[in-house]
Structure formats: C-alpha cells, structure tokens
Image 1: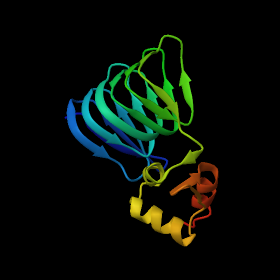
Image 2: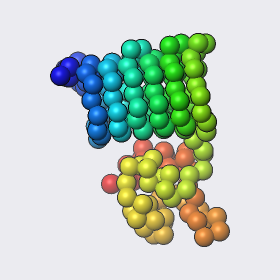
Image 3: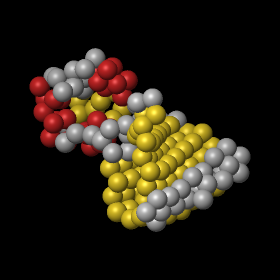
Image 4: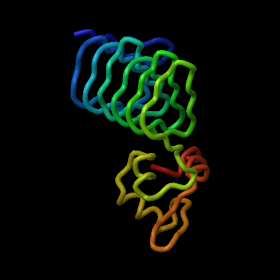
Length: 168
C-alpha cells in the first residue's frame, strides 16, 4: 500500500497513493494528499489536497481543501476550498472562501458558510456533541442568542471564544 508519513518542521504529512475505501478521520492537523482512489468519508484538520490524478467518491469535511483531481460527493471546507484548473467536482459544497481557477469543472450547488450558525452546524464546526453546545448556550458559557426557540451563534464571536481558550 502506498502510505507514507514523515515529519518536517513539526508538520505531519500523509500521502495516500493507493486505492482505499472507508473512513479516514484526523483529530490533529495534518497535511494529507490523496493521489490515488478513495471512497468513503474524509474528515481532516489542516490541509487536504486531492491530486490531479486522484479519483475521490466521498463526503469530505476539512479546513483547507485543494482539489486538482476528480471528486464526487459533498465537500465542507471550514476555511477555504480551492478548485485548481484540472479539478472536476460533482456535489454540494459549503465553504467560507471559494477559489475557482479557469478550467475547473463544478457541477452541483455551492453555499457559503453562514456567519450565523445553528446548533447542529456549530456542533460540527467545533467537532463536539450537540448536547454540549446546547448546555453551553443554556448556561451562558458560549456566546449565543435565541431566535424563536432556536439557539443561534455568530461565527466571529465563536472563533474569538475558541481563541480565548474558553472551550475545554
């Protein structure tokens, strides 16, 4: 199997050059490059690069995602999604920032991540259980406001809250 991992200047790199299927989840930031075929679910922190010869049929959730190959499936990029000239994406994408180079093919729907998040979106954004988000909102531990019967969260205030290390 074509898996290689090395440490360079405290950064973690993982190259996948083989055909794989299943779920790949990374809790720590990593620079992941998919150069072969992958089917299933990818959940990453850090950077994910889908190489120009890669073929991915997966649900992808990550921070900074660069696509140069073929992707079929939904993509959620918390920070930025870049579609390079050789990219071919079929599915729904949700991202905070989108860069599409001339030549890239995108077929599907695109929604920009909203500045106001619901409870489900915030739980996924913070990678915590929804019950924790509800408890934090009800006890005032997290910046939140009510809209009808639903809790709402401003992304900017949540990011500031996380940076101030109030989340533990």
